[in-house]
Image (cartoon, rainbow, N blue to C red):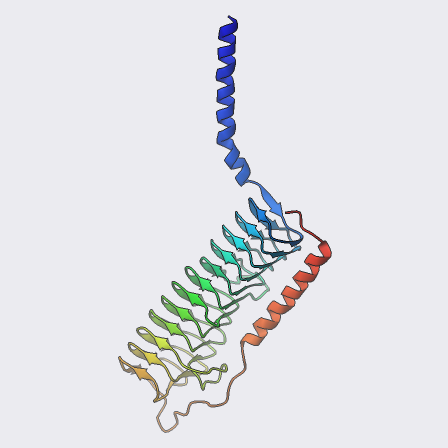
Length: 325
């Protein structure tokens, strides 16, 4: 009898041990570290949350899970790494410099903004504004997007050596501009309130600009923004149903340029090299004079918004003290 009792206890112990091992990973995955304040070069072994209305500033921090920036919260991270995705809620802000985000970045409707500098991430999505009162922004500078950019609201600028490895799709933004950057897929800009500017950039796939109210400027000498040079387009470019003016200057288009339904008619400079020719209505050569006055630098407003929120977040995080990571 004692032998049988010992055997039964051993069997029960083995079952319990197996059960613990089976549930341990799930329990670990459910852990969430709250970040309020500042943090350094440590590893967070689970998900991270910046609570609503709070600020978190991290330097050299590795986060092995996902990150959530709650409503009205701020996350400023430099030299860090996120193994998962980053989701930013309404009036939330993400500021990432020299940081790698392995997963996607999603800015919710009414999110304050996303600023990426010398960083990398997966897909980047900015949700449509809907009924929100805040106009979002996406400013990407010198960064690599290993995936797509899909934006539906606010001010959008890809700048200074940014690379998007798949498509860029923009619908209903305030504006969508691409400066000195590379898009390895298609580029689509639809129904922007103040139009689109593409300068000094290369787009490998088809480019479509349609229904933009503020105009479209491809290359320098337009009226929308300051620009040093035109761009390279790997295939067809279409600019249609646009008001506010269309200017195409100093571009190489390895396909056909279509300019139809624009009011006024598109201004297409003689210095463009367009393999497939031009289809549609152009301004009369006698009146087709490319604007020479440099327009305003549209990025200034985004820079100012990002700098103001970054400074505020850094101050709040410092005042909160060291975060318990």
